[in-house]
Image (cartoon, rainbow, N blue to C red; front, side, top):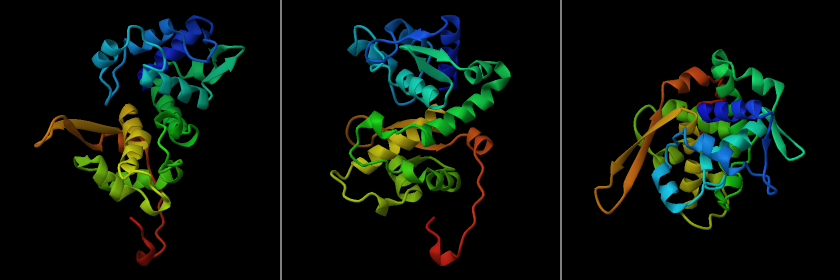
Length: 229
């Protein structure tokens, strides 16, 4: 995601702004510039190309996600239908500023972007409204390969969901709003294993070395009997 962000910021500087479509999306030529040079865990580029004659921003989920995050972080700003890199955005293009850019993207993804807008999951805002708890729980549980379902049970507060329309929706929300963005940020890593029964693959995840370098916690427990995790 840092690579995609740098591509978009550099393109905005080079073109003196990215002209948006009437619907407010990136133009196809600018989408392709980023899509062609990036890979996104969990999304197969070849399948996207097979299913679409042309690649619009809505077809290139990683590009859309990065553009929205850059705007939320204040690194791209929309003016009269044109996206321009801000002063801070331009400064973060320096090679030595890559760690600072990652930090800005990380904060924006989980605390400035409503991730429900991307997955259309009817479970409102969960588990994004307790991301601090989720991240700390991942820091102490995701040492080894674990399934999304196991991480959900260990790292979220399930009784804050309320009514669940379908039993698979919480795990779907955990993947789309927490685990997948963390893999795109390089904080988690995933591996796919063929299912022992049936078709397809299951994905396990664990902390990447970057997790401990990017995130630290100051946690005060108020008594063992009150501890949730």
